[in-house]
Amino acid sequence: MESASDFLDLLFSSPADTIVLHKEDLPEDFYDLKTKFAGEILQKLVNYGRRMVVLGDFENSDSKSWKDFVYESNKQGRFVFTSSIEEGISLLR
Image: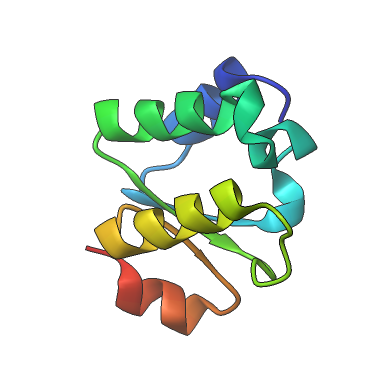
């Protein structure tokens, strides 16, 4: 997945309202907040009433802004970043 258009293709090919991806399914640009790619993706999810769980290890990031982003996203519960599907489901709102 290299663009927001690729993400829209994925979004519309899924009948579910929640998308579950592994960390590796998203390009590195997603995790660099300066690229604004994450913001584009998350805005598309909001616009189309979808939720997303991304599974992976998000504890070891050196970026304070990324850690803050994950914390706020998990708190809101529409876009969840976690290591287990069980925790992801429990965090969704």
